[in-house]
Length: 598
Image 1 (cartoon, rainbow, N blue to C red):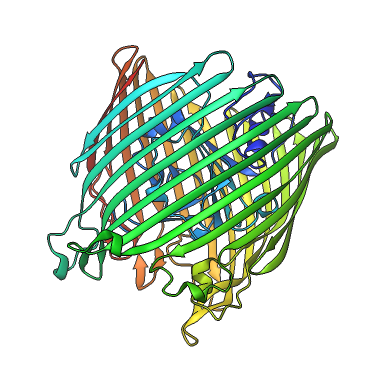
Image 2: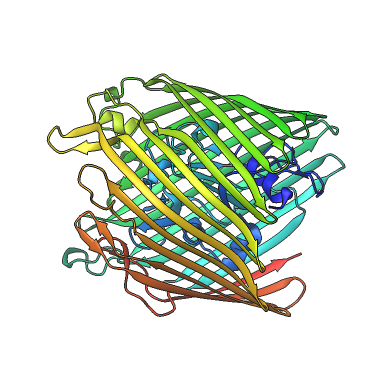
């Protein structure tokens, strides 16, 4: 495997993001990390999506991007702006840890992230690491980690405008420039509106439309004093308004999220260090038409987080790393938790310490071991560990084995509707993978078994949350990248058996068979593409969801050196399907985009 890519993936799973990248060399790459990682190896399954990949997909939302990633399934209650959850390798939606620029999103309070609310125009890069990574990140990294990177050190200026079906309109702009020899300034802003459609049609809501309006902005500044010291600060903000169906009636949602983050980075010789901190705050309101928004707050949550990470390159073949994370979560008010006094400890603190080592005793063998201890004010101490080994068995072929533990802490909402004695979900994950390069096909075959017990689930008899769930997910995934003449292909096939241990039932909204294919063809200034995905039938809360096969088509033409014209057709064959029972997906839709870069 290319050492540059390997180093990038390890860095992505290790430290937060830096806007300062080292020059491209064979041994040093910085990505999704504040640190330069040299001559390392990655022993996890990962997918990297760049800004160019997102532009090629002509994605209008983060959900549009993630639905193309291997081993990720989407459950969405209708169209743009509606509640969207993801299931990575068949785990629960709150079993995937989501990071923004390497820092955990404020999900510890409600338990999960609504991926449809995060603006896509601010994303520079997405790194998806499949499998347990709790030993580096702590709670929630059972199914995997999604790191959404918004920072960039590139100089650019671009304006983009889109219009399409359902009266969709979007405009965004981004710019970045150097300030003298040591500074770098960047900014971006975006606006989007969509009239939507009736996402949950029934007799009582005939004629309703559930639309979406979003606004977002981001500013960042980076400064490098010398070869060893650098720092950056970033402010992020987005505000979304959306309509949804509430028991046959139209209801409005309003969400505002804001964050201020900063990093101080040091690198000299074999040592690297970073000190980071972030404050984030989110307000959410739910209200009926004619009601006052400010009198109907759903939740007001805050998160303060800070971390110190250290890395020591002891020898060319031996890396040591470790750090300390601290997080302070607060639920201020809102109807999401009727009585905040039901939360025994609010605010809640979490202190985590972790260690990692990577070494190669012989050229063909790479070993990684890590361990972490989390001390939480609510549920006490929890320890996780992981060990992986990669063996080069022949030229271009590598066998990888991994075993690790992970956990998911109870959220404030879980605790509020329990007797107050909840423990974390706990998992044990085992993987065996073979990577190869055969006649121009770059492929990997991975088998995994993830057993999760002590899961927090609703007890119908007790009418409260309890640690009663047990799940075993067995799966195998094949991922391949290859070219046929000038046609570039990305293919993934997945078979899994996600079952409840006690009843043998298939987990809701998760398919046993999933296939995805992307193809692109470049001819001079024209780029053509298609995306296809298949999901077998799934169970739902009140029945079954049918299988479906879905196609999208894209085209772009670089009219001038600065102007690109794009077009996209979603759901090309106008397929009727649902990813959440009773919530039909959007019909065939058309979109056109103009990008002007200068």
